[in-house]
Length: 214
Image 1 (cartoon, rainbow, N blue to C red):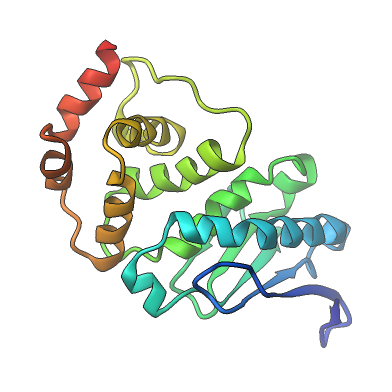
Image 2: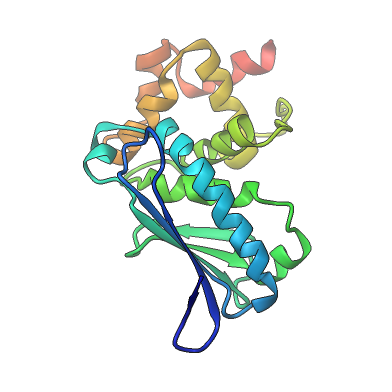
C-alpha cells in the first residue's frame, strides 16, 4: 500500500503469476476519489491477481505472447455512470469502475473479471458481440457459478454479453477451438464473420437457428 502525493491511499500489487505467458503482472487500484471503497479495492486486486493467469491462458495467442499485458490500473471514478469499462489501449491499460455501483454491489466481482478480459483481449478488429461475448464467456463459463440460460427467440446473438457468451460456448462445445481462433483473429485484425462457416460448415445465422431448434 503506497501513499500518493495527495496523501490518499492507493493499493499496488506486484504479482508473479505461475504458469503464465507474462513474467509478471502489476495491478494498481486507485480509490483516492472513494476512500470508503479502499478495502473493496484491495479485495478486487487480490481476486484479479489470482484469476489473471487463468484468464490470460484462456485468451492466449501468438501475438499476445509477443506483447503480454504486464500491468493495468483500476480506478474507481465517481463521475462514471455505468458499471465498469476497460481501456486496453491506454498506457497502462485502465479499468474504470463506478463508485455508485460498487458501493451497492460489492458482490459483483464478475464485472471486473469481464473488464480484465477486455484488457487482455487487445483486439484490433472484431464485432461488438464477439468482443463482449468472449469477455462474458470468461466471466460466466469460467468464473461465475451461475451460468446464463439459453436465450429465447426474442434475443439475438448480436446482443453481446451473456446472450453471445451462451451462443459462443454452445458453438465451442461442438466445434472445439473456435473461441481460440476468434480471439486470435480479432487480436491480429484479420477477423471476418466467414470464420464461422470455415470452421463449422455453417454461417453464424444458421448456427443460431440450430441452437434454437435443439
